[in-house]
Image (tube, rainbow, N blue to C red; front, side, top):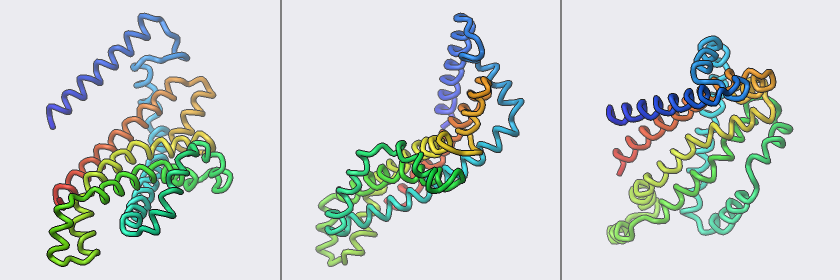
Length: 246
């Protein structure tokens, strides 16, 4: 773990150095590309403002991640245990992916307003299919030997599901949840860009409109840190759950 942190810090330092070198050597004006020093100053000077908007975005992302993941898990279980559900729901799931989720953001804002829930629903929609698909694939790929052994021992369908198929599908579910942790902030920010009065996406648009590009980059850096932190936390939780149940 220590080596991974050192590697991450080293890569970050190299990227920041290249960024600063590009700004200095190309003599780029701050309204085109501010250097990391200016962005750090903007982050320090506006820490309270950025922190407030980050809290709003984090609450939207967390609510969307929880609701979308639960909905995806329930749907995958239903698809795996019901042939009727597979015939009715699975084609609808595939069909929904033909429609770009981002295109729904204006409609959701129109229906649900500029508050929290239009952003939460955007996050739910963007992570629902990856979680459902990953968990369903895991449930349908249970090693045949396990199922034959359960049948020999006269296990009920419910016992086969919860004691064999679900534990065997946890790595697939973990992959879906890791993707969801990265995609959920995208959905929330897209919703904030379309219509909001709070959040990091709203702050980025506001800063861009006022030509405060350093503030916009500072909000972007905080959003990236939020996404990385969420991804690490979800990955660790998935690793512990998988190690405990598999």
